[in-house]
Structures are given as C-alpha cells and as structure tokens.
Image 1: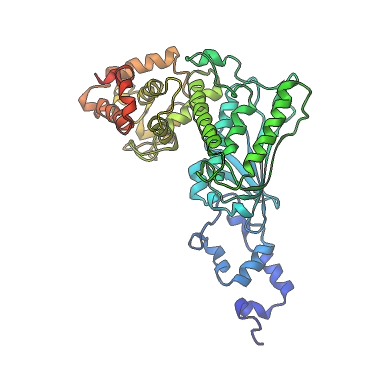
Image 2 (image 1 turned 120 degrees about the vertical axis):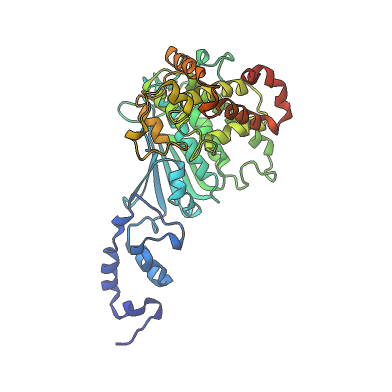
Length: 438
C-alpha cells in the first residue's frame, strides 16, 4: 500500500475512523490534573507524537480531552484555607487541574495558556460569615489569580460569577454581606478606606486591572433586592464590565483616562495594606493559618531571596504610597516574622525543644522552607498583638544580638536599609520606625 498523506506517515494507511479510535486511547490520564505542557520541549514522552506533524496534532487535539482543544475553562475559587491548595481549573470536557499556588501555576505552564482564544468563567464562592477571615483568604487567592490574567493579551469572554451555596451568601438580611464588622478596631489609623466595607468590595476591584475582554460579565447568582446598597452593587458590576472591555492595557499612557487607572492602582495599594493590617490582628483559625502562610512564604528558596509578598512591600515603599503606618507596621511585622522563623539560629537557641531537624530530613535547614514552618506551627500563627506572640518575641529577642547566632541584627538592619535606600522621601521616617537600628 502507498502512503497517501506524507504528513500522516504510516497512519495514512489507516482509515480516518480507525485513527480516531487510536487517538481516543491516547493516555490523557498521565497529565490530567498535573501538567499543562507550555512548549514542545516540555512535552512528556507519551506526548511526543504531537510533534510529528500539524495534521497529526490537529487530529489528536480533536479527539483527546487533554485541555488543548477546548476553548472554555472554568476556574473555581473557594474561601476555605487549605495548605498547597489554591484553585481548581477544568475545561468543559471535565479535565481538571489542581494548582497549589502561583509559583506552581507558573512552573506548570498555566500562565501560558492561549487566554486570548479562551472563554473563561471564574466562580468565586461566598465566604462563611462566621469565619471572618475567609474573605481575606478569598482576596489573596483572587489577587494571585489576577496576576496571571492581567498579563494575557485578552479573552474571548470573561465571566466573574459571585456564587452562593446553601450555607454561604454574598448577602446578609437583603444587603451585601460584611464579614469583618469591627474593622475600625483592627485598623489603628481609625477606620477603613472608602469602598472597602462589603465583602464583594474586597474582590471586584482586583478585576479592574484586566483589559481587552471581548465579552465581559460580572454578576451574582443571587437576586438583587431593592435596597440602595444592592443597587450600588449591581451598578458597580456593570461599571467593572465596561472597564474590562477596554482595549488599551492597564496603566498604559495611551489610555485616554490614564488618571482613572492611576486611581485604581492607588485604591488597590491601599486595599492591600488594609488587608495585611487586618490580618495581623484578626482572631480566628483561618486567620492563624493565613498568618502562617504569609510568614512561611516571606522569602522563597533562601533566606534573602524574593517572594511576591516581599516584592509588594518593597514596591509600596519605593512608590512612596501615602496613607497609614506602612513602614512602621512592616517593621514590626518583619521582626515578629523573624522571631518565629524555626530555621534561624536565634530561634533554635531560644526554643531548642520546638524544632528538631533530624525528624525532618527532607527540610534543608540552610535556607528558607515553608514546610518547616508548617511542621512547627500546625495551628497557625496567633494574632500579632496577642500575649503568646509577645512572649515568643521577647524570648527570641534575648538571643537576637548574640554574634554566634548568625548576626540576626545585621540581617535585619540590611533588609530595611535596602528598602529605603532608593527612596530619600522615607529618610524622615527612619528615626521613628527603625528605632531598633540605634
């Protein structure tokens, strides 16, 4: 028999129906839920047939439910905290990817999906009102997700759905839900920022950074009542849809209303600082775990590496963001974080019975390791203004300046010196905020 189609090679000797039967058995289970190959050299061994020719790739993609061929992806963001469980994504054929965090999504090529050819649905599930920290958890998850989406060229469609369940809702007594009622008590500067009271106001502004969506929708699965606050919520969603449809990039100088984008950025910066300050003091189990997650990911693979959180702190300082006690709060938070680091020599001198590295051979004590934190603080980090935190900090401080404990003082001094080095406007704050450097 003669090869009739060179692009198919020996497969051209088989009828199209037989080839279809073969492609349907093309082992998609080996990568379902784990990896999205982003470049040809990232393909697994069983996927190398995709590189044979465009014709074979097209035939395989048409039959294999691998996530390559379906142009609809559904992302679910839940309010509960789970260690190394960030979001779930699946296509309409049921293929699902469980993502641990933003670095995991980047390493697995999730960021490199052809978003401009995709219809994206994002379901943001309502937080449980009695666990006030769940809205903070949702904020952090959605914020990281938007970091991916705002880098896309665009979207065929983007639906942001505020979903509810039998036990959770975005509404409370026919008005928007407010999980954090004592917000003024948690913010030492005397109150919350405008436009950040209701739960949905923590979430929807994050999507204002996304542009070039051909069809944008933002809505709640619950019916709006007649109250003024509910009507404002509906109008806010409509305005967000119009912003996401804009074709000029976010914060682009070419954007006609660039100043409006600048206002969005300023609001998001203030919202970030407000959320971090609330998290410092919020008492709940979820808040304890979020504080642990924040401390354990302050750095990455080494003591003086970078992390998204540390980079955000530096950006706020170098941009000279006005409003609230940013530098002094960061200073206090940083010192408390160092007092809790189970891999520091000062910590091990102060609390020798807490962490035994011999029991955790997989943890490298020479660097920074999230698993070490989660081994020691299984129930999270209590509020930073509590007696337990204060007691730990004081005990750690006794070992703080001892030279044989690795020069903790020098490391701390270097950290904040670097933060303010490029911004002379912050020099006037040194005396008040960095008193420990005297």
